[in-house]
Image 1 (cartoon, rainbow, N blue to C red):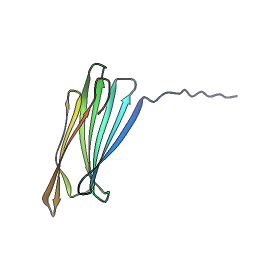
Image 2: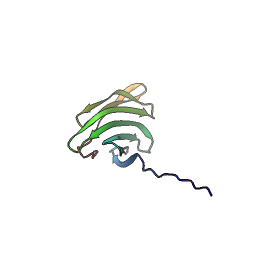
Image 3: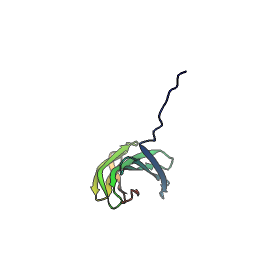
Image 4: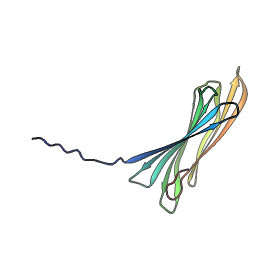
Length: 140
């Protein structure tokens, strides 16, 4: 008789997600998605906040994502890394500027997008993003 033993191991990390939708006056809308990955063996978390801009018919125009890595001790927290990415689906939009920075226990991202018609800039959209971690590891 052959008996095999496969040890059970808990996942080293846990993913938590939440989504919010904001509707704009012109019928377009923004979907904001927060994803948090918690490393169980250490007091660290990685969080990403994505903003997806959709037209009134539901078509995706562009998406900006801020990602931050955080450590926390129970008495303090700090942001150890921050990154900002932008993906464009509708080519009338283009990136004017984007940046990411760390400030204490926060990751901060700024994106400025332009929209053109027949090659001429007709609109500009500024997006300010922030992810914060408190001393207990709560992400907002």
